[in-house]
Amino acid sequence: MTGIFSGWLALAGLPATALAGWLLRRFARGSFVRRMRPHFAIGYAALAVTLIHAWFSTAAMRGADSTGIWLATFALLALILQTLVGSNLQSPGAYRAPLRKWHLLLFAIVLGLAIGHVALNAAF
Image (cartoon, rainbow, N blue to C red):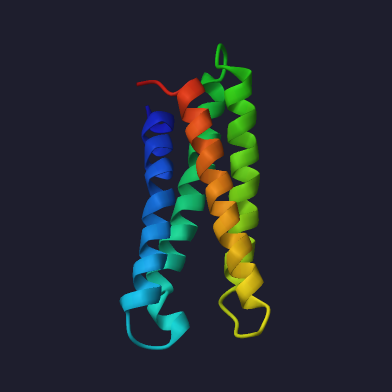
Protein backbone atom coordinates (compact mmCIF):
# COMPACT_ATOMS: atom_id res chain seq x y z
CA MET A 1 0.00 0.00 0.00
CA THR A 2 2.89 2.37 0.69
CA GLY A 3 4.09 1.94 -2.89
CA ILE A 4 0.72 2.90 -4.36
CA PHE A 5 0.27 5.95 -2.13
CA SER A 6 3.83 7.15 -2.65
CA GLY A 7 3.48 6.74 -6.41
CA TRP A 8 0.40 8.94 -6.62
CA LEU A 9 2.03 11.44 -4.26
CA ALA A 10 5.18 11.51 -6.39
CA LEU A 11 3.13 12.02 -9.55
CA ALA A 12 1.20 14.88 -7.94
CA GLY A 13 4.49 16.44 -6.85
CA LEU A 14 5.61 17.00 -10.44
CA PRO A 15 2.98 19.53 -11.56
CA ALA A 16 2.83 20.99 -8.03
CA THR A 17 6.53 21.77 -8.20
CA ALA A 18 6.22 23.28 -11.67
CA LEU A 19 3.22 25.38 -10.68
CA ALA A 20 4.97 26.63 -7.55
CA GLY A 21 8.03 27.59 -9.58
CA TRP A 22 5.96 29.44 -12.16
CA LEU A 23 3.88 31.31 -9.57
CA LEU A 24 6.84 32.21 -7.35
CA ARG A 25 8.95 33.37 -10.27
CA ARG A 26 6.25 35.73 -11.50
CA PHE A 27 4.43 36.94 -8.40
CA ALA A 28 6.64 36.57 -5.32
CA ARG A 29 8.82 39.39 -4.00
CA GLY A 30 12.33 39.26 -2.62
CA SER A 31 15.61 37.84 -3.81
CA PHE A 32 15.41 35.08 -6.37
CA VAL A 33 16.75 32.32 -4.14
CA ARG A 34 14.56 33.34 -1.19
CA ARG A 35 11.33 33.50 -3.17
CA MET A 36 12.03 30.20 -4.96
CA ARG A 37 12.69 28.22 -1.77
CA PRO A 38 9.22 26.61 -1.74
CA HIS A 39 9.82 25.42 -5.33
CA PHE A 40 13.16 23.92 -4.28
CA ALA A 41 11.62 22.22 -1.25
CA ILE A 42 8.70 20.75 -3.19
CA GLY A 43 11.08 19.58 -5.93
CA TYR A 44 13.43 17.85 -3.50
CA ALA A 45 10.42 16.32 -1.72
CA ALA A 46 9.06 15.02 -5.04
CA LEU A 47 12.41 13.36 -5.74
CA ALA A 48 12.47 11.85 -2.23
CA VAL A 49 8.92 10.51 -2.54
CA THR A 50 9.77 9.08 -5.97
CA LEU A 51 12.76 7.26 -4.50
CA ILE A 52 10.58 5.95 -1.66
CA HIS A 53 8.01 4.77 -4.21
CA ALA A 54 10.71 2.98 -6.20
CA TRP A 55 12.05 1.31 -3.07
CA PHE A 56 8.69 0.07 -1.77
CA SER A 57 7.34 -0.93 -5.18
CA THR A 58 10.15 -3.26 -6.18
CA ALA A 59 8.59 -6.17 -4.31
CA ALA A 60 5.33 -5.77 -6.23
CA MET A 61 6.89 -5.66 -9.71
CA ARG A 62 6.15 -9.30 -10.50
CA GLY A 63 3.57 -9.31 -13.27
CA ALA A 64 4.00 -5.60 -13.98
CA ASP A 65 4.33 -4.39 -17.54
CA SER A 66 8.05 -4.28 -18.32
CA THR A 67 7.69 -1.28 -20.63
CA GLY A 68 6.06 0.63 -17.77
CA ILE A 69 8.92 -0.30 -15.47
CA TRP A 70 11.45 0.97 -18.03
CA LEU A 71 9.48 4.19 -18.39
CA ALA A 72 9.60 4.60 -14.62
CA THR A 73 13.34 3.91 -14.57
CA PHE A 74 14.02 6.53 -17.23
CA ALA A 75 11.67 8.97 -15.48
CA LEU A 76 13.60 8.53 -12.23
CA LEU A 77 16.94 9.08 -13.98
CA ALA A 78 15.58 12.17 -15.76
CA LEU A 79 14.17 13.46 -12.46
CA ILE A 80 17.59 13.12 -10.83
CA LEU A 81 19.13 14.98 -13.77
CA GLN A 82 16.43 17.64 -13.52
CA THR A 83 17.20 18.08 -9.82
CA LEU A 84 20.88 18.56 -10.61
CA VAL A 85 20.09 21.10 -13.34
CA GLY A 86 17.67 22.89 -11.01
CA SER A 87 20.22 23.08 -8.23
CA ASN A 88 22.61 24.79 -10.64
CA LEU A 89 19.95 27.39 -11.43
CA GLN A 90 20.20 28.75 -7.89
CA SER A 91 23.48 30.54 -8.62
CA PRO A 92 23.61 33.73 -10.69
CA GLY A 93 25.22 33.67 -14.10
CA ALA A 94 24.68 34.02 -17.84
CA TYR A 95 24.35 30.25 -18.21
CA ARG A 96 20.98 30.28 -16.44
CA ALA A 97 18.86 31.05 -19.53
CA PRO A 98 19.82 27.89 -21.47
CA LEU A 99 19.79 25.87 -18.25
CA ARG A 100 16.20 27.01 -17.58
CA LYS A 101 15.23 25.63 -20.99
CA TRP A 102 16.83 22.29 -20.14
CA HIS A 103 15.06 22.31 -16.78
CA LEU A 104 11.70 22.83 -18.50
CA LEU A 105 12.44 20.21 -21.17
CA LEU A 106 13.41 17.69 -18.49
CA PHE A 107 10.16 18.44 -16.65
CA ALA A 108 8.18 17.62 -19.80
CA ILE A 109 10.19 14.42 -20.32
CA VAL A 110 9.75 13.30 -16.70
CA LEU A 111 6.03 14.05 -16.77
CA GLY A 112 5.54 12.18 -20.06
CA LEU A 113 7.49 9.16 -18.86
CA ALA A 114 5.64 9.15 -15.52
CA ILE A 115 2.24 9.33 -17.22
CA GLY A 116 3.28 6.46 -19.49
CA HIS A 117 4.34 4.46 -16.44
CA VAL A 118 1.03 5.14 -14.71
CA ALA A 119 -0.93 4.17 -17.82
CA LEU A 120 0.86 0.83 -18.03
CA ASN A 121 1.38 -0.07 -14.37
CA ALA A 122 -1.05 1.82 -12.13
CA ALA A 123 -3.28 0.02 -9.70
CA PHE A 124 -6.40 2.12 -10.08
